Image (tube, rainbow, N blue to C red; front, side, top):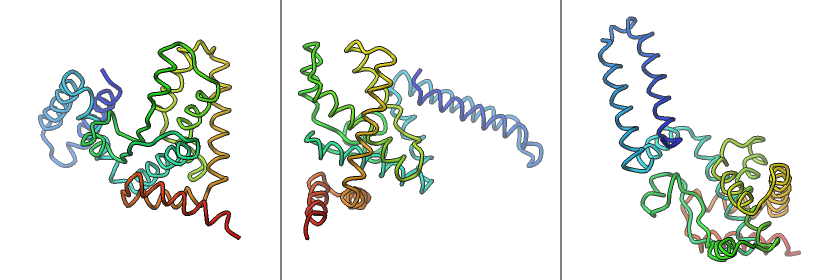
Length: 231
């Protein structure tokens, strides 16, 4: 069962427990929470086996979307990926900020910034990758966490990014200690890039909030870069 479905199960158990405790106070029939719980569990099972977790992702993302801070974190997180990829010369094919947007664009999970990683995939298939290529992509993967840490002093997202990084490094034979070292190094690199281009980052966040196109976002970055170097 996917993590999303497990989250749905956890939510249903919590709601049932809460309703059992508070039900007598509001004259709520015990059958109501039981039926609701079985319904959620059924949806979670269907989602896990038939929808590959997309339904659960949509539901959880919709619930989380009521939090302004959550929405703000997502924009800042994805802007970190976007700007770092732009600066490191990795082509960006699109981005999404919600699970619904991701579903419409055919992206898995809750979406994010989509890169052209054909060159990376080609090198991985051959079982070898240049150090420069590895560092570029690892830095981009850690940039969302770096952005959250810089803006909010902590990072709540990034588990998928760490999984991608771990998968690639494991396939290349990195030990656990070497993986930790590479993760810390790339996180620091990402933070430095963002701090050195902070006005461009802020302009990008504003553009992504407005759902600007990739081209418009890139133009916002370039414009602010020119302003930073102008006398």
